[in-house]
Length: 212
Image (cartoon, rainbow, N blue to C red; front, side, top):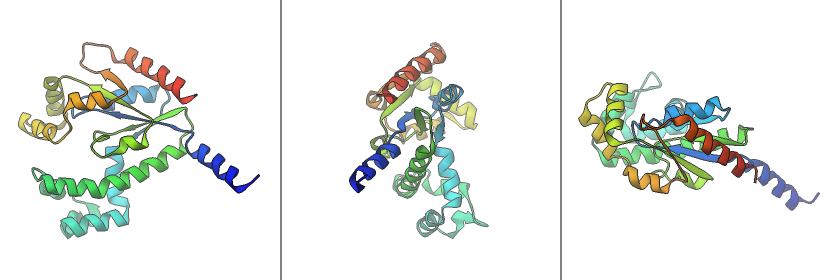
């Protein structure tokens, strides 16, 4: 077997996993929908949870955060989330800076996770798939849609925050109708339409696509 053929087979093996993103704005219920996919046996990489873990484990990332946001960002080697949040809240430039530091590390971690999966496809759940450019590493993207009023109420109840705080967070994300137009599939999570049949339909389509 020549080296070129071996490299080609190696590439196919690393790309055998069909990568699917699942996204939606704050309060859309994308994590809830992701749990339904998990029940179907599809593994899910939760980007926000991973970012929190990496920010405490990746020494290079920690050094970059400390360099840009100060020594107080970590207390006893543990991320001081409230201190960091206070710096980026209502400061677009600092938020962009933080994202530019954290997103590459999370993307790398997500790719390493994807390579370990053995199912026909795997999901990456993230709010900022398009904003961070992650879509270029994915084969398809699922959008989870919910009306703005419902999203606001859900976020207020979940995080115990004010309507103004929720709206402020929503304003920092891509406009929802634009985001949904960029997605390959849309699941409506408006508490009017049943989610399970929608998930099953998308699941079957993704199984077919992953086997091509």
